[in-house]
Figure (tube, rainbow, N blue to C red):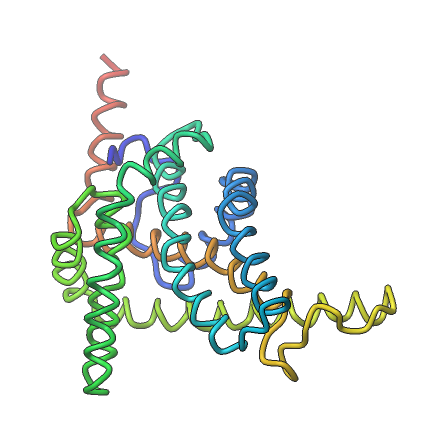
Length: 261
């Protein structure tokens, strides 16, 4: 990562600033790229899950479990996009796709190991939040740092242990954001179908059935915001740990001095 060429100012930020910046990045810096990635990689998952529930009559509990599994992998493509958007002027769909698939094997391995550790920690309730925090940045370690599966898990654990409180708060915010987006999509979608088009609820009802096409859509839409927020939180932690903001200031001073000569 060349911090000198960052498209976003490198400095220390609080959690509210990070989430605000993530919102602006999603709808500004990476708007069209994120939209293309969502249509190609996330939307097919939404439609496939809804079709499986509707025509194969799979229970919504199972559908949500599969959604969580697919989301763990799909959010990686948005992590790669966020990383490239941070440090490159022009980021293409093809470049993001190539980087993601070139590291897909290690990424899947890291996800399996991290989720297995989280599942095992669930046997001891008090250990689950600790492991959850330690595994928070497996995505960045694997996809952006290029670490192998086991190394990515270890890097995430070592990295997060120094920022336990901030990482835990970030994960809670992401959980709230996910729930808000899911409910927002459900309420807006159902209002349009019932009140505007007078079609009833042909796509399911989250509150009565346990899920719907709109709720699934909201869940996968939340991945874009969550992956971007998590990446920016990772950058903030790297800035605090490695002094990136100081490096950038010295680079700016050096550049001005060279221009003055």
